[in-house]
Image 1 (cartoon, rainbow, N blue to C red):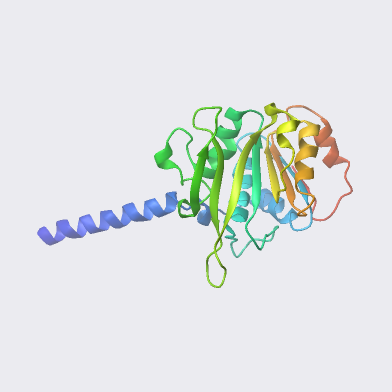
Image 2: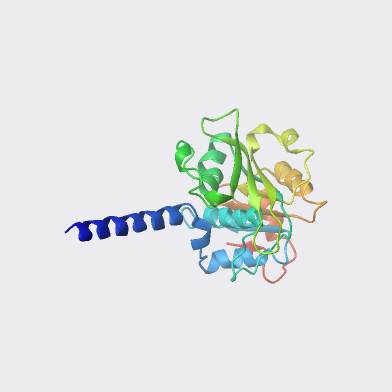
Length: 236
């Protein structure tokens, strides 16, 4: 009986450890469905991409998974999209501070109001080096330092992710040189243009993930009227 109880406890401990590893490394389990895979693959040839789809169809999850890959340098064997061969500086943004916290930050880091669960988002827990709190919405982060590389012959470095919102205005989007900007929800054209400008020096990328609520806005028309390149930068 004692041996049986000991075995059960050992088995339970193993299950708990497996669950912990699963929860703290969501990126390893990410497998895109076809439209997400098309969106990712388009990044290999296109600096600007739009993933336009209905609610709860995996737009933000796809954006979060890709941003986590760029931040950590952990690209899976199936990856066919854009890659960076060094640490990066990225932004992730939403309409408001609360929206940025509740969508891209939540997907990337974990539940905003539960710091003990940070590290259960798309950025693996073992890659999060430092978090800096923002001054706006409760639980909102200003930035994260992420471990990049460090496997095999690749020397470890640090990527930086900062969170932004459109409500702060274009002036708050000026000055930085970035490798990428992720717009989660549709931005005003001036904000989008400023974000794209931040990536010009690095040849970086922009991603827009949103549910179309504003009709044929200037940002949507920018993609719909762009010269088509295969695979198409417009996924939606």
